Image (tube, rainbow, N blue to C red; front, side):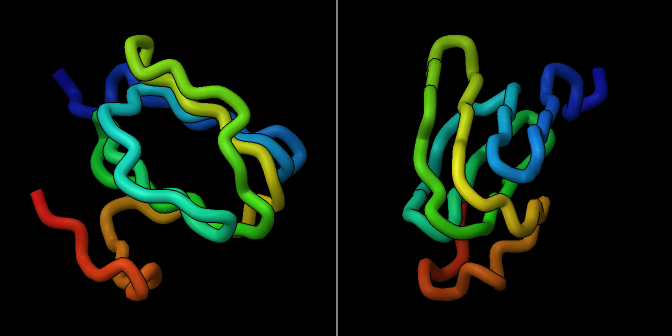
Length: 86
């Protein structure tokens, strides 16, 4: 089975993002969310970011704010938090 199965990202007008296949929300603030997904680590970067909804059991998170970037796997851009380890 492909590890990305069960993981999707939907962006609405760069103001809202829905991520499925969420395993864990690592860290977040108004400028970045670091999320562990079935497809690997995902960084959502932007401005005025906030959790709109988070269903841990279903593995779905909705984030609202000004979406600026999505980055898989490499969290060096969010260096203020250091590297994520497993």
